[in-house]
Amino acid sequence: MLDLVPIDTVIVNGRLFTMDAPGHMVEALAIAGGRIIAMGSTAEILALSNGRSPAPRIIDAGGRVGLPGLIDSHCHPDMTGVRIGRWHDFSDGATSSRDAVLDLIRRELEGKPAGHWFLGYRYDDTREGGYPSREELDAASGGRPVFLYRRCSQMGVANSAALAEVGFAAESPDPPFGGIGRIAGSREPSGMLFARAAHILIEHVQASYTPDDFRQGLIRVFDEYLSFGLSSIHNSLVQTQAIRACQDMRDRGELNLRVGLMITGRDEELMAAVLRSGLRTGFGDEWLRLVGVEWVGDGSTSGRTAAYTTPYVGTPLAGEPAEYRGTLLLDPMVHRRRVKNALDHGMIVCTDAMGDAAIAQIIEIYESVLKDGAYPDHRLRIEHCCAVTPPNLAGLLRNGIICSSAAGFAWDLGDAHIANRGAAAMVDFWPHRAMIDAGVVAPAHSDAPVCTANPFCAMSSLVNRRTRSGQSLGPSQGISVFEAVQAYTVHAAYAGREENLKGRLRPGMLGDVVLLDRDPFAEPKEALHETRVDATIVGGAVKFDRLGAWT
Image (tube, rainbow, N blue to C red; front, side):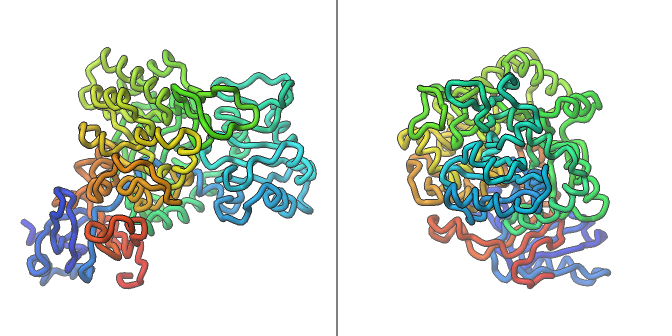
């Protein structure tokens, strides 16, 4: 039968790790119609392809290591894309003090009309010297609205003009599951906005953004993702304009990687419409597909708002209560009804939870739903799922819950976790050794733009148990390089109910392959984060070529 199948692409002279077992590899494979149809030696695959008309494209891997296309199971490309060129990206490192931040705002707004916003994202108070006060932002902005959104996407600081635009004043109540920071001893807003309060401001600012605004930014973001070897992503908390943008890209032939949609629970109308429509997980095609639905259960550990059973340590935020343990953002009874309804509609349910108290709450909610109905293959997910204490690990295992692990936090935000929770607590953070040994499925993700989208940085922290700066997260939870790659291939595919499509190199699977500049299984594990991608091949087509060798 293979003699009759037109072959589009062959990859030869490689060391292509299938991810079926450690060390299992083939030299070559053939791709037809975007799928792998044959695997074997270079001689076998070339013999299979000889004499074809049209002749297949030959990609000579030149002895390089190849992996299945990598999958980031939780990131926010739409959040990044629509802000490119509109918001200032504080991750550029140009501001290392609060005064530098204020000078930047002053320069950017000089001569601008009244009502012109300064918007910043990826703001890191630990790097930028803390948060400017509302009054400092007022002085720097000349009365124009300013909002600095913290990199964790759970909080930010606004000036008086920005607060006025969304109607936040002394008499304003805190929105449900959100907080308006107050000046000590009064109800006057301090400028700090937490959880839902920050998101209300973001929604106000982005209400005028069009699907084409998202499309133009997504093209750039996806090109960066491809350079890191990502052939598939799950777009977390995806919003209406981004859904439309991805469909437009698909129609225009601009969608160069595969996108899974996780519908945002922050837009109740969108969520209700999707569930009412009858769509369920898996709807779509190989390029654009519905993964499931998502809600947010607590804040962030680096921002000192994630929910824990014990108080935070280290330096408190201004106005932080004594013995503060963070905040839970979901009503258990309401969320239980949501989860059951979504499961009844055939959806994978994803709920974000970082702190051990939030994770325990979501496990309890999931468990109560699973007792009520027959959901044998539910694929319930807890997103980020950082503080997996022994009781939480037992709850994940008992209920077959997927720990969608924010391994990118370990690399980029690990120092802040140590500062806010203490070094001794790190044994329970991202404990992939314990989860693998117990049998808990734990894909890894970046949460980009919160952290770098580069999977090899997150893998490095899982293997070496070190942060970007080199601080130790405790060696006992370290895993092998093969196990770390599984978290971005096999387990990530399972988390999206796509294990029959991607995550391994096998006949019948999608022809997604990443070629590397080194063998990560043979190189010193301490250098894993230095791994570079030479080519990313999606459906047999080269979508990224670092060396210009195959395009």
